[in-house]
Length: 126
Image 1: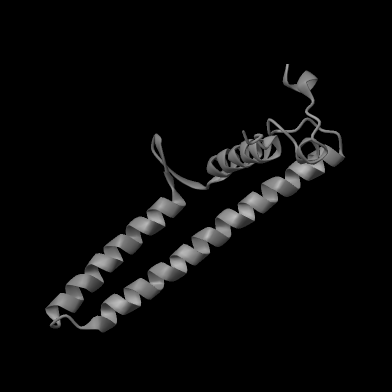
Image 2: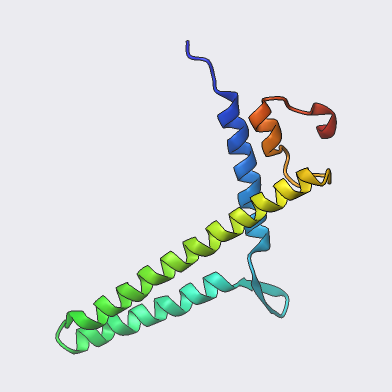
């Protein structure tokens, strides 16, 4: 039987906590009692733009130019969204490393130093 790699399990646990903190840091528009995430708002506007370009293409006898332009804009939106997510993840990892260096209490359930040394501090968890 193959031995389970605990380092990868701990890395998975760490990055799940990082992704959870990215979701919490996502900027929102406060509208009454609800918070609308800005990225969902932007994607909603893009969906309306895509539908409008689709209808314009249909009214012009299925011209490809409006749909091609809408898909290009969508591709740029995806690239920008991924860049924002990656930047937030790098910021959170950098913040964890800085907190670890300053001996502050880490916000993640496990630190990168513990993962790399393969020594888990169970006293901190209890």
